Image (tube, rainbow, N blue to C red; front, side):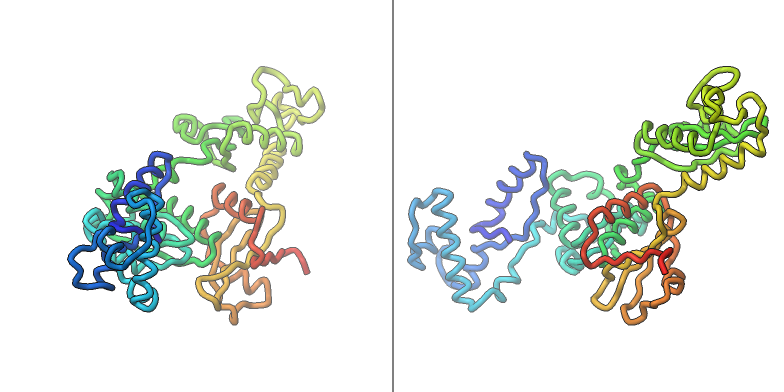
Length: 387
């Protein structure tokens, strides 16, 4: 809590310095002028000078930053002593926002009613449409930061946002997964950064006029490429082109595919892999489409796999008596569920059946990968291939 005499004046300077450094600074505020009026009613003036004299507060270097800060701290101590604790002061705490600068339909009271808990929040426009989805370990604090930034910069949120709803998750992992899923499902207009594709390159499959399945790396925004090819499918997505090509080279070797039909090599006649006896001749018609495509389909299953083992991840739930359960199966994220602790089945199959399917995409799989790199001590992993 930022405490000062005439708190808005000092707070505005500190916040501006943070803004110049590229940060959004938001703190709850408490003004000793307002507190002093409550604690010592009837004084002719509540300036810091007047209160120092009235309360006989010792001060050195008056009107210097450190001297005034020490005097304010001593004044605050006397106010708390007079009020016998902090209870009376709490009603004067300001969230760091001016109600007049909030979007229409919002109030300080509405923001104060938001939970200080982990979850996903939704900003709605005047029609109720979701225009922004976010997640936070502390929903109220994050919303305050949004509006403090809005007050300083104005902009699109001020124009569109009229209401808020939220869904508690307890688990930060669930919040990340749900946020990713909801942004892709709802496509909110203000989630431009999250909506933009973090995985612009695809490892794709299509069929030529002879019946052979091709694998290729292509930018997923290339709509003409997609429309000109029969049976076009996206098998996996990547943030960088070199990662997509590296993965394609790996399946080329592992499944003895053709360098021409994977577009890793251009030209007429047999591909280089054929000369190395690692291609079975699809490029020159020695191997027919049926035999070749069977290996492409086997490679396709590998390309869809992100995790080596299937597992259930047990994390904290939305309250003390609940667990969150995440299922990874066939190498990919499947979905999650919330289960009461006293109803958590011991049987893995029964637990698996409780999970509600969600969209699996490269982002959700990478969220789980990052989480597993340094999981909290409270998280439990149950591998489904263990007895």
